[in-house]
Amino acid sequence: MRISNVSRIGLLTLGLSIVPALGFDGTATPPTAKPPITPRDAFVSGAQSLKAGENAKAISSLQYAAEKGHALAQWKLGRMYAAGEGVPQNDLRAFQYFSRIADTHAEDSPYLPQARFVANAFVQLGHYYLDGIPNTVVKSDPDRAREMYSYAASYFRDADAQYNLARLYLDGTGGPKDTRQAIRWLMLASNKGQYSAQALLGHLFFKGDKVPRQAARGLMWLTLARDNATGEADKWIVDMHEAASKQATDDERQLAVVYLERYLKGQRE
Image 1 (cartoon, rainbow, N blue to C red):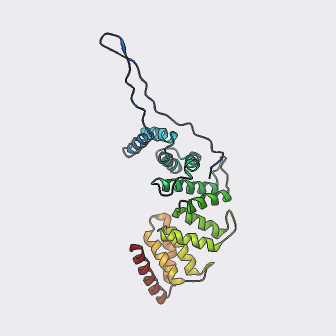
Image 2 (cartoon, one colour):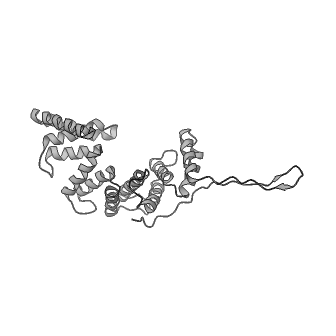
Image 3 (cartoon, rainbow, N blue to C red):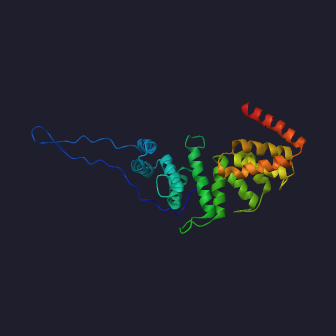
């Protein structure tokens, strides 16, 4: 899979200026050239500089590593530009970095250590294609968004991609509605601990929305999601769980506890 029409970014590079030294007799002695810094070393240096609060040095090192094709440096810069952490917030720059990762590493083995970062790049691209980036060439393209999520969900088996893909199937965004496929992807993501997927799956089961009602099983998934949720952004999960708990009968709550204990035991084994 290739990401097309992505303009390259002019990046800073690091170099060493070598000036001839004079020997004791006044003649020039051949300079001793230092070996060029490797992309990995530049990435490590950039990460260390970030921890030390040396942002300018960190960005220079990360950009050098990224220009040399270091995927983690590209991903880190993409995340930084997306969030505006240490650099001015710039979604287009973030999009370009994530695109370079997807374009170069789409066929990497899903078992490589860096595979989760490659998968996340596809997920981030899915977000950008879904909504578009205002005042840029990146326009809303739900079909393309579904492709990005689908690739990361199937090839890399990424839980976040599976959750986002499920939402598109539920809403019929970027393609036809398909509740069966949505539930399938939600189950896969939920079993990996993706708590947003757990919450949505639980809500669907508890309400019997688009699926046969299974209140106790739904309450189990909502409870798992509630236990994993953190921060104000997850308030919707807390609200869903509280509403279901109040509406559930005593029998449904007791059975949900039984399901939860079985699930947690199975996860430990």
